[in-house]
Image (cartoon, rainbow, N blue to C red):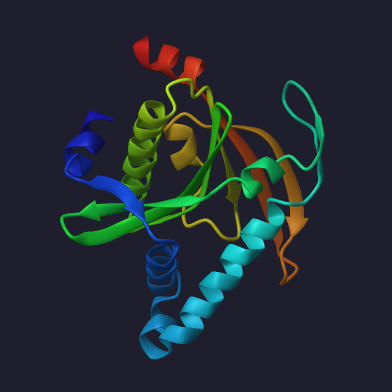
Length: 195
């Protein structure tokens, strides 16, 4: 972890506009298309984002590690205001992620970054900033889609998230897709880091 800090400690996160975030994602998720038809790449990114937001309104029957949940698990996060962070290397945007709060909880997701190291650093800095913004923050939640997310689920695990439930689905092409529901419990993460 110290090696990671040495490579990424100069990166800084700050709040950005959704438009900035979606253009960054379009350029990095669809680079060939972005270079040949910027509007189509941005439209494709907006469609991905809209699908992510629609998913947040869906009802689920989630069989968890400790307890099950039936209902619209993410709907409260959908209703709250939403923000985006940008991760900067100097003046260059190198990553972005959506986040919002509900009571003593935060939800973040739709993370895209130039590298997995940047993704980890961005996630860590957002968590530290969230603890300042919301001192009673106790849980951070996220999602991981195997067919959309840039990196495998291990980068989230490295910064304290654990999958507590998942859905195995088919994507629009009929390919297998796993959607993992993740939690980072502040007390557990801080206790683990103090060991």
